[in-house]
Image (cartoon, rainbow, N blue to C red; front, side, top):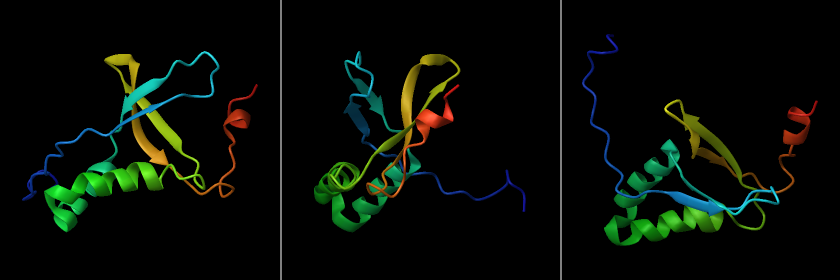
Length: 113
């Protein structure tokens, strides 16, 4: 099979932008406002649009990507990245939200000298 000679369906456009505003652990942090560029978020939009129609899609997305994910029994971790052309502009590439106590935080140990 030729990788470049395939009959590929065009990806559906997602007309919404997923954004999160948050404060990090830094005591000098005034806040961050970042766009989420996660494939899973776009696919959630497509799935919920098919299941609930235009009237229900935003409500289901808020429930999934905010209410359920940021429930008190979950801890949200952000995968952040940037582009070579804009090295000081960051975006959320993905979110990891395990239940509290399931995953320990090893970040301090990972980068300690």
